Amino acid sequence: MQDRIARELDAEILRTIEAWHRHGTGIAEGDFDDLALRLFAYQIERNEPYGRFCASFGFSKSAMPPSWEAVPPVPAAAFKEATLATFDPAKAVLAFETSGTTTGSGGRHFFDTRALYDAALLAGFDRFVLGDGARLRYLNLVPNPADRPQSSLGYMMGRVSAQRGDGQTGWYVRGEGLLLSAFFADLDAAIAEGAPVCIASTAFALVAVLDALRENGRAVRLPAGSRVMETGGFKGRTRVLSHEELYERACERLGITQDAIVAEYGMTELTSQYYDDVRADPSHAAPSRRRKLSPPWLRARVVGPDGETLRGGIVGALVHVDLANRGSCVAVQTDDLGVQFDDGLVLIGRDAGASLRGCSLDAESLARL
Image (cartoon, rainbow, N blue to C red; front, side, top):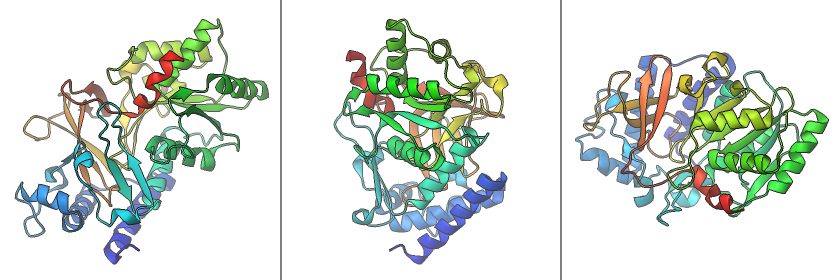
């Protein structure tokens, strides 16, 4: 059972999400700042490890940060070292695991309600991927939530498929294997029916599909209105394709144009996601022109080694401030590098010294199949 303050904060966050989802209403700077600081005060009181962390910077309920930009971001790796929750994790209704594939030491992000996660993911997906309101058939090259309920990506696509799909959904990752025969059978059926599809895939799994098409001398033409949602990368563990090459190959083998490919950027440690701006602005279809956009309750800071926000156009580490992260930490520091421009965020890659992490590692072994 949530406490009164949690219920009140959730209601306010949900109203903010709904206003943007339904009407495109943003958040004024002062309102964002006010809500972020109230979340911070709530979290340092109820999230003991985060409270101690912030105290080391001199912040407490009686000595608050001057603005949301001064809120100390917890390193994403801290989710592996501590239970970062404002409630008893034994009462969590969702517990998503960060990837510990390379180290065996994954972390967990706990949620005491599905409401915030569901509202945020559907609002972002509707705006950035389904701006035309399309009902698609989802062919998911990501973990099936029935098999891996701890996968945030699987949960996300499960909700999208159920709420926005045409009633026929396919899942093609099982354990460490990719079910290519089943995928192509379902893809061919959709093409025969003229049913537009959304292929939701990690970058690595998408390469495996494109390789299989090439090896069999095949190219298909997806039904009009189809699209690809690509997420994750290669994380330095496998053969790497640039986005330019990956998207060119996808267009050649799937019979789509580059503006039908939308890249998503998210983290298990966040509740909300970023997406390419390509559906709203097809002139940005080329990978070099793409920008990542976020819903108004999610903001990125590009910071230098001292943690200070860098001006636009300068490469730095990414700090995410996610107002939907009510049950954990409102600000999260990542190992990802990026550049902020007036028209959005550009991802550069990962800090070379960072440990490997990410969704695409789920498909690591698929190259051998």
